Image 1 (tube, one colour):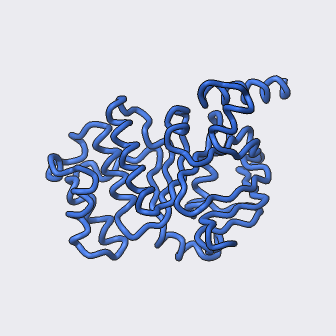
Image 2 (cartoon, one colour):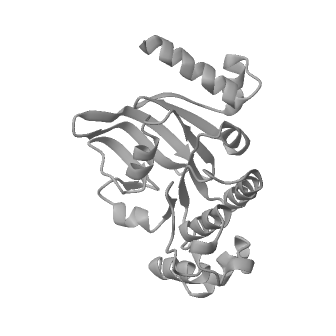
Length: 245
């Protein structure tokens, strides 16, 4: 695993009971890049994130995150990553500040980190409000701040902008660009193709548990002679559906 690689996956398999969800996928993620994993519902995106972030164990395959092996060295991996799950709710009866204080303590950081996060994620106006009274945009912002409460080198984001209005989504994109500018590696799953196109250094397409393609958005556009990533992606998926009929 070279110094420039944040994540390395070879021949990764994962099954649940009698269903094979991941069928031998392989890819790498470079340090400091935004890498988007795309695919239809049920393709295996969330399962991949859960394995890389040490929530699930693989059945077979070679997986390294920041030089550490999954699952053998997950304790070390957890110290260096943050995760924003698709269903993030936080502690709804605690204030924004109290939520961040919890995660900062969890990562063993100094309490002063809380003020830094509130400022970084523009949470000053709501820092003393309970999460149950906040908008979806603010809750997502608190979730990202929570995922960044330590000294994380990789942030895993599973459908982070679902349910956000257009302005909240754009504000969230700016936060991700700020993270990237600090050298943080961002692993993103999303159904919003405009999001993937604007943010990603590279995208990967997962289809029925198999990794079909890893490339830049521009390469996909050229390949399918498309004007945007959504058109290229839909053409690719439609061609795969046709082959599987």
